[in-house]
Image 1: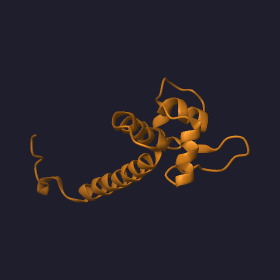
Image 2: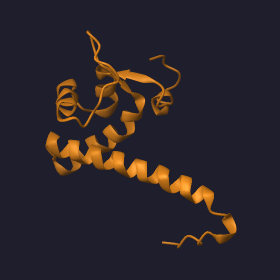
Image 3: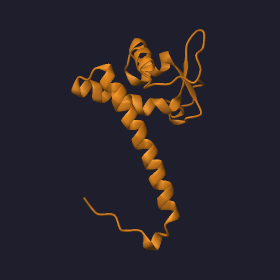
Image 4: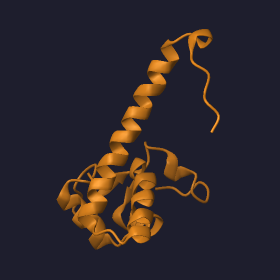
Length: 114
């Protein structure tokens, strides 16, 4: 992956990252990432002979899952479950935004202040 800025390129899902790069930015070891692949929680783009490649879209969920792992002392199986839920939440948020875009602004409910 070409380095463009400190971490700006990581947010582009069209970019690819290696296990080594993913390990560095998400604070998980390559062995832990391999275990998440074995659980099916982390899916490589293609199995390369030297090092598998992943979509950069995994960076943010893995960072969040890694932080939760450290904060709550989770094992890797729990991290796999957390990754699945983060993926589902992202999908639901995308769906919600697309449905909200179909509703005229004048008929949308006003957000409640918290």
